[in-house]
Image (tube, rainbow, N blue to C red):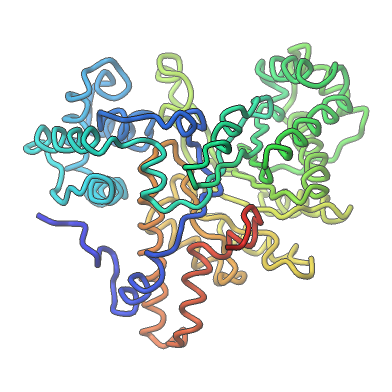
Amino acid sequence: MQFITNDFMLGNETARYLYDTYAKKMPIFDYHCHLDPQQISENTHFDNITELWLGGDHYKWRAMRAQGIDERYITGDAPPEEKFRKWAEALENAVGNPLYHWSHLELKMYFGIDTLLTTDNADEIYAQANDYLKTHHVTTQSLIQASNVALICTTDHPNDDLKYHEQIKAQQDFKTTVLPAFRPDDLFKVDQPVFKDFVAQLSELTHEVKTAEALMEAVVKRIDYFHEHGGRLADHGLEEVHYAPYTPSQIEMIFQKGLNGESITREEKFQFQTFVLYELSKAYHARQWVMQIHFGAIRNNNTRAYEKLGPDAGFDSIRDQENLAYHLNHTLDMMERDGHLPKTILYNLNPVYNDIVGSTIANFQTEPGIQSKVQHGAGWWFNDTKQGMLRQMSSLADQGLIMHFVGMLTDSRSFISYSRHDYFRRILCTWLGEQVEKGEIPDDAALLKRFVENICYNNAFHYFKLMEEN
C-alpha cells in the first residue's frame, strides 16, 4: 500500500497548489540542529539503516518502550537486524503518532520505499534499505545535499575548538554552509558539579578565572572565537525562565560557592541565571548575534533508567512554571531597558504558554528596520507534531505577524530528519489553504506566494543574515 503520495496531508486544492508551486521547491535553512560536525566533515558513510535511523533517536526509543520492547533492542547490544524488527513492531502500532508519518516520509524520501513498514515485511525492507545505502554510497553530505539544505547551524559547546567546521569550510565540493552555534548551558549550572569542570577548561583556553567578572570576560573571548569562525547564533537550554534581581556581591558569592561545590539555593541559582543572561545579551547585541532560548523541559525523570543509560535517553517531559509571564517579560525588559536586547527567538516546550510567549514578544518589537525582532520559535520537541505546529502558528497569527515567522528548524541528530521540513510545509499549506477556501484570507496569488516562501525559507535567510544573496 502506498501511503506517502504527493498529496499527503494536503487537505484542500489550495494547499496542493501552494505546496507544488512554492513550498516543496524552497531550500532548507536549518538554523538549529544537533548534527555532528565531525560526521559532516568526514562525510561518514552509512551501510546499515539501523545505525542511521535508530541511533540516538529518543523519539523512536520512547515508542519502542511503550510497545514493551526490551531495552536490549533499543539502546542495548542486540544485532541491528533485530533492533530493526523491533522498531517495525512499534511503528505498526504508532498510528496517530507523528512518528508514523515521519518514518514513512523518511523511507519514501531517502530510500524510495513506498510500502508500509510492518513486522511481516521488516526483513524485506531492512534488506532493501541497506542495499540502497550501499549501492548509492549514502553519506552525511549526500543526504544533506539531497535534502536541498542551504545552511546548517550545529550546536556547539563554548570550549569546542571548532576544527571540524574549519575542515568543512575548506571542502569546496560541499556547497552547504555549516556554521557553529554557541550553546553555553554549562555556564548556567552553577549548582552542579559540571560547572567547576567547565570553568577549569575555560580557564585553560582563555585566562585564569577566579571571579564572576573574570568568568564573563572569558566567556566573551569564546564568543569572539565563535564569531571568527562564522558563528552568529547562541542557544540556551533553560529548565525555567526566571528573573531574579541581584547585586554584584551576591553574584560573586554564588560563583565562589559554585566553584567550591557548596550548596546553592533555588533563588541563588536563578539570580546567577539572570546575571549570565544579562551579560551574554550585551555580547550578543554588540556582535549582532541572534539569541535563542529553549525552555520548559524537565529531564531524566526515571531515576533507574538514568543510572543505567545516562542523560538524553528519552526520559524527559514537559515542565510547568509558576508566573512565567512575569519572569519572561522582566528578563527581556532588563535587556531592552539598557539597550542591548539582541534578536531573540523563544521556544516554549509547554504549549499552554503559546499565548504568553506570543503576547510577550509583542512588547519588544521596538527596533526600526527589524521585522519581528523577537520571534516565537517553531513548535519544539513535544510540539513538533501536526497539532503542535498548528497551535504555535495559530497563536502567532493571533498575537503577532506570522508573515515574518522564521519557520521550521530540524532540532535533530539524524541526517534524515529533514523530512520534517516537508512535513511542516505540508501542514503550513493546508492551514493556509483552509483559511483561503473559507474566505478568511484573500485568494491573492502574490500574497500567498510571499506567505509560503517567506515562512519556508526567505524569512530565516533575511533574519539571520548568515549567507550572501545569490
